[in-house]
Length: 100
Image (cartoon, rainbow, N blue to C red; front, side, top):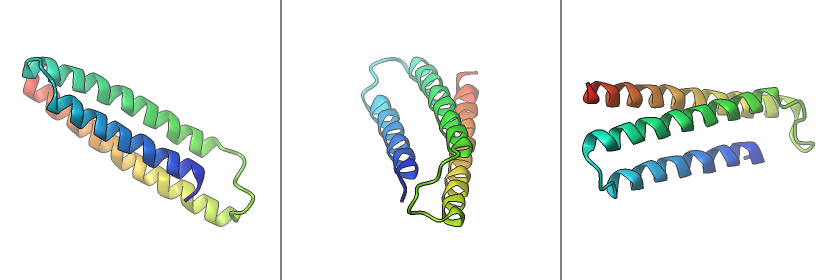
């Protein structure tokens, strides 16, 4: 796994762990917790979108990886990130429905 893919995996793992711990130890009411979670998810979504854009705009590929392999890695990371963005959007919609 190249450095960018590894960084993406670490970012996503940290985001998920932070969200889970926030829910487990939240002393606020459910509505406040959901609002905070929605805000955090939207921020994670923005960061993830920026990471995707950075990945796609990277002109240099690692020297030890062929161009085709590099493109495959980038495409795979992009697909996974897009699925995660869709999941975040679904979670945010679900939270907003619960707040309504």
